[in-house]
Image 1 (cartoon, rainbow, N blue to C red):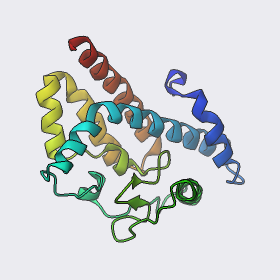
Image 2: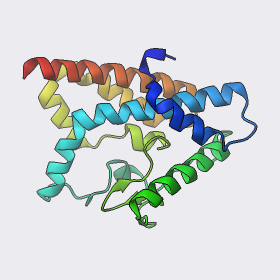
Image 3: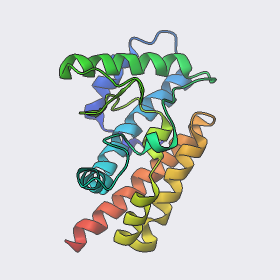
Length: 195
């Protein structure tokens, strides 16, 4: 894991959340800690590369998902079932969504996802499942190819692998998340140089 991809300002929040999860092995705690950090870093990358495009399409009525993330095209609610990370991640999701709900006074739309609210989007900022982090719809993929050409292919390939690995192989998912962060930063830096 790359220590340069960790936002140490976020560490306090993650440490506080993880205190509520008793009896984690060192390895499991290490992987969860990095996963949460990488989700936060991916959010920064997607904020710059994709969010404006998605919001604009949604406002024009060109996107049929009605303020629901791309992840909802592929799935309904996915949690961490059938693996040894299920209990700690589900508990972390409850903790994070409770903190968000208390601040925003929102109620999720259970029919979409128990952590999604149409007005404010996903309540989860750090504990999103891999599909919510890595899935990009066809329209968004075409838009990125239009903007960046072939240099975005590694970025797109690794986002696909995040979804494919999911929680079946969480260490592989972390490696792909790290690659998406690095490739995304390259695209962002190239975009800034063009402007």
